[in-house]
Image 1: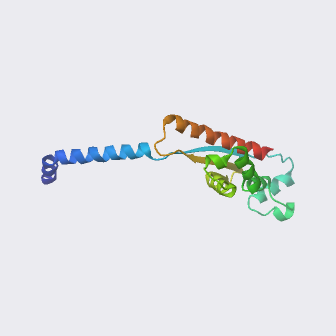
Image 2: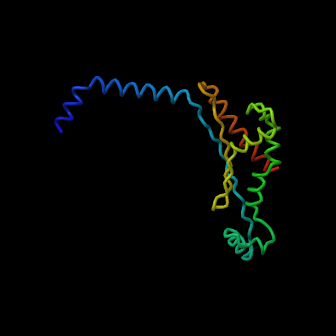
Image 3: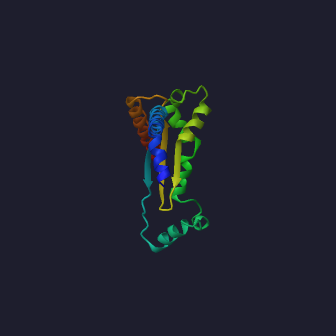
Length: 165
């Protein structure tokens, strides 16, 4: 044990130099890499079941057993399917001119990039979680970071409004 302490003491300048060098390089890399900002929104479906039969059917729908009885999907599944549809994504790409934002000359390419930034999850609790993640550029400033944060929130809120309409 004393031998290791002696080696550390003997090479203290080398250890200090390498530690500072690694800290400096790590700090530099963290400051220049693109950052990803995610804005999320949760849609909660209202439960308007007042009788025993509709309550029982909604319980069965959690297990996927009521689709044959009710003749269709639950409201959560309809909205989830709408979130994944091409039509609402087209509306968002056109409304916010995302071809310019993603620097794409082809509309379908911008649609694909928007689809990659969009995250839609159906939770077991019956909520739908929608998130949009946008990246900053390399060597971005704080003002550009703030713009990306605000734009991600704006896109997420607009996406939910389009779903509502």
